[in-house]
Length: 225
Image (cartoon, helix red, strand yellow):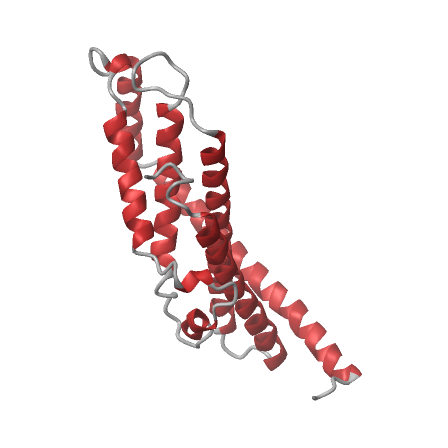
């Protein structure tokens, strides 16, 4: 095996520092642009029209007679079904390996396109949150035939699944940011190498998060049966 000399280690250290500075500049620029876009949206006539409509709706609560006694089970079941359908489309068998080398083939390639599996997992994250919100309302403890106590084990399993998908989203976005930075023209080889290492590390974190989700996803445990 090759042995790194002191000069080699020095180049790698400098490359890592430059990679961090490059990422910081690019992310700061992206954050500034997003902030400007948000400020423009908040000052738009469309935003004010939506705010006026929300204010009117809030002043007219309850929205319909008998809303307080409405059966919440159908919309909660719809949220649950959307989640289970989305999870069924995921490659959970592939995600059953803690080190999923096959799934890393595209993720570690120079292809600038996003990993084709990331979007479905992000969608499951949003649907899981919607399912949790529906359960919170359904099991809020209020009186009525549609309310029931939510098992603590189910809530804990849902929370663990949600945390795994949060880590998945963060790692996927970090890998994408590293890949984007590595495509900056005329960067030093040591900087590109450091960004490549970061990208690979985050794609491994993506697979680890998928494995964690696959381990905690059990139909009978998550209240989706």
